[in-house]
Structures are given as structure tokens and as C-alpha cells.
Length: 524
Image 1 (tube, rainbow, N blue to C red):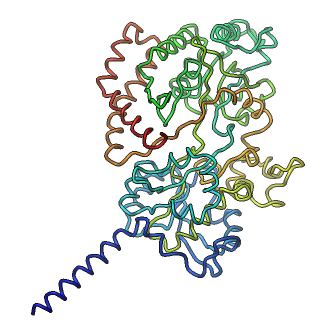
Image 2 (tube, rainbow, N blue to C red; image 1 turned 180 degrees about the vertical axis):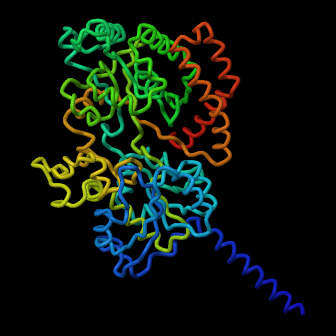
């Protein structure tokens, strides 16, 4: 009986160990088994005998059905990997994604999925998403090269437990990560004015735009200065006051010290400047409430004096009146300019623990982070949808460029990238649509003033994420409401100290400590 009992106990322990290993198959041991003999580590096809994978994807408004996209049909032939797409329209996608995460039948991968930092941590540590760093190191030479060239990419997507659960879009092209400052040079020329270099000159130019009838119609209908929304208003010129967003928040990093600047006196000075522009009606009063369509309509009207936008495509018919300028020098001598981090779109692609072919899947996605693969994704097939110009850069063919539906919709029928958020590499060579000569000239005016590096939004553990969300829920709402009221004059600057005290009472110092800890962990 003792022998039977001992043997039974041994079997029970073995079963528990096996069970534990099975439950932990999401950890790094998941990818230690090695690929099958069907797998090719280099070149195409990726597998000798066809395999099938199920991908769950977000479909942006310009996109057609993924199964019909020429890029994916061609890539299936190249790789010998058939993708069955569940492409969900953008409206309602978040709800469907949440259902997928809670489903017993997971997809093999999430594509263009807008996975948040919290989702990556939650579903990575629970075993739904697998860690990718070993797969990247061994089977993704293009991503590895980019990680080595830009260390901030890897730092910004690595979870506190050391794992990478999702990969981003990578934009090495500065022009793809900035809004340009556009000014109506036709108006400047007519009024005998120069591009503004500082705060006083900017006021002078805007006042002339408002009062001196530069469009020549005899009416006071010009809009001297506008912004897309409150967020753009607060961030586009704040660098001239030394205030730049780092780590995805309103903070500077100087000498390895994190400083949230929402209570800084330089912000007060910036708000007072905006308040002056607002009172004199030099700043568009619709900026706090206007819809995107209104802003786009104003750009295309040609009746704007100064505004911010990434590329001239939205005001193509009047672009000859506009040129880019440098940021003004602020009252403290600052001339910084904001940009997005190189790893701009977090969580564009992730592999789940249901995937039987993680090695193949990583090779599949890595191709789109190469120069050849990125051109393939964004332009399609040479001779069918694009051609190479004399300088070696790709250009969409006339059928695409002249499509009545617009270039974005035309491209969106054969490629998933229109609409943003695709796992891809954007470089100077593959971005003619967002980087035409006029945008390149405007970008050259900004490049000397870009903060380097731009640190991406950190990944906190689940407990810290909840604390950050709780703190920011009140802080961010109060900050937006108060800064808007300071600008419009609904809140007197005599209340500044009260505003600061309120933010401190909401825990802004604790929030600063959390970001400092994240910076020390990821970047020091």
C-alpha cells in the first residue's frame, strides 16, 4: 500500500507539473520548441507546404475587404501562408476586440488592432498574447535592425516584466511624425510682411491678416490663426515656451529628471499669450468646438492665415498660397518643436497563444519592416498600382492618383495602410503621399528644432496602470477645462495659484513620481 501510495503521489506531482507547464505556455518557453521542418528561416516561401492562419483586423473607412486586397493576395503566393481575415469596421471595433480577448477561440494574430498598453500587459501576463522578443531576435532581422538603430523603440514597447507583447508602426521619417506650420505667404507678400520670428512679430502678422483685408474682398472674413482642436492648440506652439510632450504626457525630461509642466509658470505665460490672441479675435474662436470637417473646410478655402497640418493634401487646391515656417523663438529663448515618437502607433500587431505557427507568423510580419516590404505594403505591385520615378522613389500610377473616390480610398482597396495604425515601416523613400516636395520644404524648417529623442508612452504594470488612469481621469479633465477657460477669459489668471493647488491636491506629484520611475526603468 505504501508503494502504491508513493507511486500515486508521484503521478499526481507529474500531472501538476505538466498542467503548470501547459498553463504557462505563454512565457518564453513557448517559443523554445523550435519551428518545424516545413519552415524556411530566410527567403520565400516562408513555408514549403501551405499553412492557414486566422487574423483579426481593424478595417478603417478607406479600406476594402482584406481578402480582396491585392497586397495580401500576392503575399499569400510569396509566403505559402493563407490568411483568413476577420476584418471588422472601425466603428464598433473596440467592442469586438474585447469579445475576441474573452473568447475561448482566439485568432492567431491581431492585425492593425490598436492594442493599448493596458491590454498588452493584461493579456500578455495572463497568457493570451505571447512574448515576442525572442521571436524578433531570431526570426525578424528587419525589426532587430530597427531596434538596434533606434533603441528608444524597444524601450517604449517592453513591458515591466521584460517581455514585448505587441509591435508598433515605426516611422523614421520626421515628416510623418509632425504637423507642419503653414502660413499664407500670398497674404504676407501683399501686406509687405516677413515670416514671423518671435512672439511680437507673430502678433503683428496676425493682426494685419485680420485688419488689412489680405484676400481683397472688402470684408473682414479672414481667419488669422486656427488649430484643429484644443489638443493641437496646446501643443503646437508650447515648445516656444520650452514645453514639450514626452512619454505621451505633458512633461519634459531634463538631465534625467521628469517634470510635469501643467503647473509651470511658463505654461501660465503661454496661456496669457493665447488669451491675448483670443480677446483680439486673432485666434479662431471655433477652435474649442469645431468638428474635423470644419477645420478641413477652412484649410481648403484658402482663407486661413496660419494653421498646422501634416501634409498639403487637405488643401491641395490652394497649396500654392502656403509655405512652411520655423517655430517662433519664445520669451525665454526656446524654439523647440513637438513630434511623435518613432514608434508612433503602439499595439499594431500581436500573436496569441492559440497560434501554432509563431515563427512563421513573425517572419510574415517582419517583411513589412524592410524597405522592399514597406513599399510593397504602401504601393502594391510595380506595373499594376505603382511605378518607380527616375530618382528611384515609388509613385502611385495615374489611375490611383486620379481616382474620383480620392487617393486614400483607391489605395485602401489593395492595401490596409490608409486610415492609420497598420504594422509597417514609414521612411523617406516610401512616403510620397504624405511627403511631397512642399511638405519636405516645410519639414526642413522644423528639423533643427525637434526634441531628440522623443520618449514613447511607457508600459506600466497593471496595478500602476490603474493608478495612472485614476489620477489622470481627474487631472486631465481639470487641466483641459481650466486651460480652455484661461484662454477664453472665463477664468481669471488671478486664480492661477488656486489652479495649481487643485492639481497638486489631485495627486500630480504622485503622477510625476510614477513617470520618473518609468523613465528610470526604461531609459537610464
